[in-house]
Amino acid sequence: MNIYDMTLHQLWKMLHEGDITVQEIYGSFAGRIEEVESKVGAFVNLTPDIAELQVHKAADRWSEGRGVTPLTGLPLAIKDNMSLVGVPNTCSSKMLENYIPPYNATVVEKLAEDGALFIGKTNLDEFAMGSSTETSAFKLTRNPWNLGHVPGGSSGGSAAAVAAGESPAALGSDTGGSIRQPASFCGVVGMKPTYGRVSRYGLVAFAGSLDQIGPITRDVYDCAIMMNALSGHDACDSTSADIPVPDHTTGLGQDIRGLRIGLPGELFNEGIDASIREAIYTAVDLLTGMGAECVEISMPHLEYSMPVYYILATAEAGSNMARYDGVQYGYRASGAKDILDMYIRTRSEGLGTEVKRRIVLGTYVLSSGYYDAFYLKAQKVRTLIKADFDRAFTRVDLLVSPVTPTTAFKAGKRADDPLQMYLSDICTIPANLAGLPAMSVPCGFDNGLPMGMQIIGKPFDETTMLRVAYAYEQSTDWHKRRAVLAG
Amino acid sequence: MMTMKVSRKEVEHVAFLSRLALSEREAEEFTRQFNQIFKQFEKLNELDTSQVEPTSHVLQMQNVLRQDSVRSSLPIDEVLANAPDREDGYFSVPRIME
Image (cartoon, rainbow over all chains, first blue to last red; front, side, top):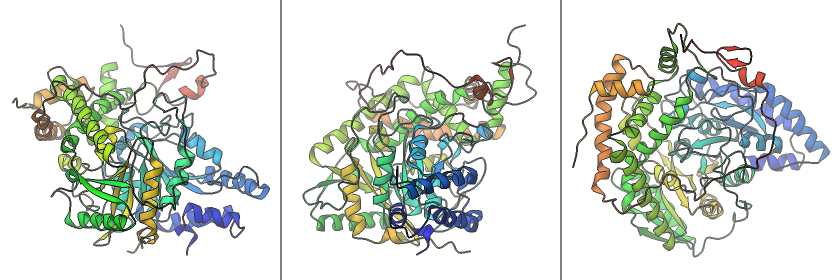
């Protein structure tokens, strides 16, 4: 097995047993990037200078045997909307192409303290607004399983990097599915933690009531390791939850006998490809065979998730994007005749079409005449959606569904049809609206493209999700497959 | 049930409120797309929400405040390093008043 094909915990074990050095690990991933990055296009910026410094520090920690954490000496990629001091934080936008953050995001700080190696910043849909990474102002990212297809989005660069062997794990951010959908499209594990579990300080805001940072990894064990590293209260994020963090690995390997799993019929409707529904039902049979009780349930308000999400997310996005005015940082247009002209030219030249579409849509739904009909109405239906989950969780411990209605689609296929793109987020959006933890676990292939199973948990109960995901994963071999980057 | 029809003129006005100037193509596309998207949004009218409270945030937290103590902040030079234009420790912008 190639070093670059291994998981975090496999690499750590080799370091622990002295079978490999931190330099060798970094060298293997750097070599793999050299070999495949021109095909995959996962990164906006590579950060070898930073990584090489970290390699030396991590090697010292290992040789001195002190301060070694489960991530010491292991490479990670960071989505390019989280601040890493001294490296552009572009959000894949012309607006922030040259913006260099003067501080670290809390998650970046935590991983740095753990001794991880930062190998680069990954491509995304511009300001995380998209489901295919095609709205990036800089480049296309390809799906490692089939280069003609998209990797999903918005954390497409992170998922593609992990699937292509360029990084064993990566950070993503998820507002309506932006970790889970690309993880599903690229055949890797992705988790959106409970809202408030992971600090968002230093994450460029898209929609503040929905955004959450989480890991993308090659297997469930690595997901648990990353959750341990990322979770916890942060005084710099006022939405961060001040509650104890469990060891996310404790449930791994425990049996799942007696756990109750609900299948919401609304997420298995005819809009979902038959092959994906079948793959989930097969997975459910496996879980039942291991002693879980699986029941069909109804959550009638889930079918309203798409309008609720696109009203609330665009309203919040439109407000957040007001800061890009050419004054404090980022792009400023030249030749403006006055300040209003400067604002308008800066924003019109610095932002791409999808971002503009969402800003205008968000301003619409907040404008008088539309506020009550759209924005307030959506907030009320959000209450009903959340109530559906509350009711479901009195009967079951977890919910299982597809992650996406289709496997990864062809590049360019939906780029000009925003409504179709928005509708494809139907299975992932509800967990964001209700603030719940949700993850994608590989559950098969259709025509060579990966499929994912979604597990949604109770608030702050990531450990039960991980326990079920691990039990499923260990009885399959989907997570052991690696993309062959041919052609 | 009301149906909202969006005109191109209105889209351009809302874009202006957002401090955006749309290209010909964007203005035309957005108008057409918003009419489709609003049709989806209007699906919410099927639900009676007269007795439902709105949710703006899922966490039940209020007034999260830090200790009122003096802490160092980022150096001004570092903060201004990203400014498109600066002068004497301030952000510089086109003239606002004559």
